[in-house]
Length: 235
Image 1 (cartoon, helix red, strand yellow):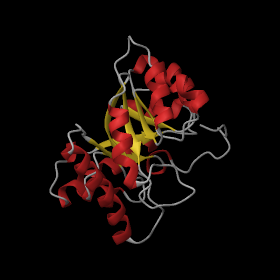
Image 2 (cartoon, helix red, strand yellow):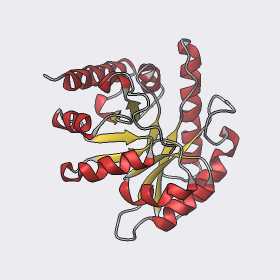
Image 3 (cartoon, rainbow, N blue to C red):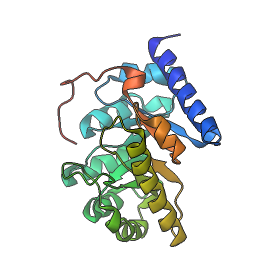
Image 4 (cartoon, rainbow, N blue to C red):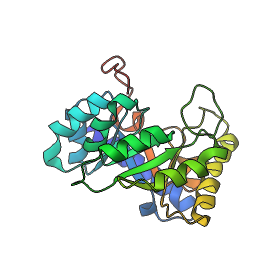
């Protein structure tokens, strides 16, 4: 078994254990392998081990991998901050966008999505920790943005996403993830059909699964430490 395959198995075992501890079926939690800064060969290795969904943070790097690995039929998620001048590339190369935090970006993605492609799956990013340096809509504004995004024809609103501040305090992490879950429940009660909570990474996936995550975004625990500087372009 290759190193990446072994790490994938270990992460999937963690997800299964966390799900069982929460009284959930392991299959209710999907693993998104965050392959940013790693070459197409690493993604190919993970795909050979059975991983199908991959997340990218940088537009051109991600688009290049989508093209290089198109024959594998993988599912591609854009999970980084997105500048308005790069929405067209993302709208047509990716299957999902996790970081919608303002209506302008959503409108551009909708308008630029090829009409021959299915609607682009999107999640709204919520700033659950209130950090000024972090992307995401404030929790109080999530409902209005969600309603506007759900009305766009080129998009399919699937749920919410968050990146809480790094913390060694399990109680704090549980509180952040629980806030996102409550927001999703409130939006569902208002009539929106949502099925996705994108939350949890290598260091905190257990807390996220306990609070209802349906997608966990794991990079380091699968691929190793980031290859800093390999792809430095902004999203």
